[in-house]
Length: 408
Figure 1 (tube, helix red, strand yellow):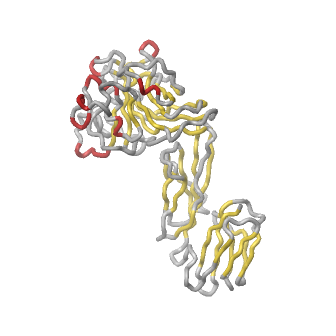
Figure 2 (cartoon, helix red, strand yellow):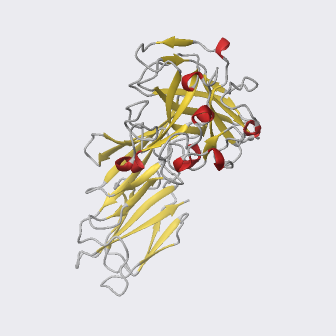
Figure 3 (cartoon, helix red, strand yellow):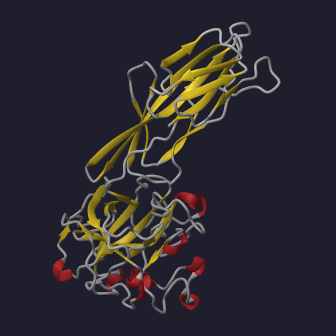
């Protein structure tokens, strides 16, 4: 899913209905009022005529709050329709799901939010779809049938501005009427792809006769059921947690990437200092990030894909300032460890008189050789495939060289 929590923007939104300012997102209509093509209908900052604002979700972002007018619709957390923070990050979308539109301009107002996937979904593959919604504070109405529809983009060729798109059946839909204006609610489901799906469209595809509504806020705006949307994800149901290979560093060394860099992912990250036996939640909803712990730390990702929970662990080993994690060139001890990757045997050259220890990524010692010769061969055929550390300690100078090898 591209830009799943609306963090990336082409330009900071300054008013309402600037859906396409969020990178890889847009509205589905292709009418004369299209924001991308017909600027004759635009007000300042690229907004469109109030009558046709029902066609477009509104992109909201905290990026320029200091200069924005809170009476408009793009500010976070306060604007004319809500006072609510994003679920994560700085951006979210404001979408009309049901009602009579702006002051009755359209009988059945609907706006549809369309996003781009990284690539076509795989035919026959089951996918878990998740997005989060919260009703806006000033809304008077809550409704059901909030859903997500996947296709090749054909839905984008319609000319119905702000009307229910009943000809399409969303693969993911909720029957719950959501009236909560405080807490984000997860909408989640799974479906099997045909292989043509490249776009996701979020909205209410039912007409008023088939949409259940609840009037819950007598003091709210009577014109429609308005929702904020954040954190959209589309993940193969057989996906598993990936915490990354871990790494080694020192208190003044580089930070280490854990997980990967694909952006949003509905997961939780926990960290615990090795040997402490305690864990703390340190982050969530991200596929990975850089860390720089003060001491050797184990990181655990917990990923829940439509009820299928998996975990993965990465360890970052931190050495004291006096320790060099890389082999020095021209220093008191130069050694080489090869081959890498290795199979049955690994060779350590240039470590005469040193102590050699092979450890796993948690720091546990597995193999040790004291007072090594100039060329020392160590049998690793009995080790499981994975990543290991080769520590070479010069017992005289106390210089420690650490190498990472892969056993396969």
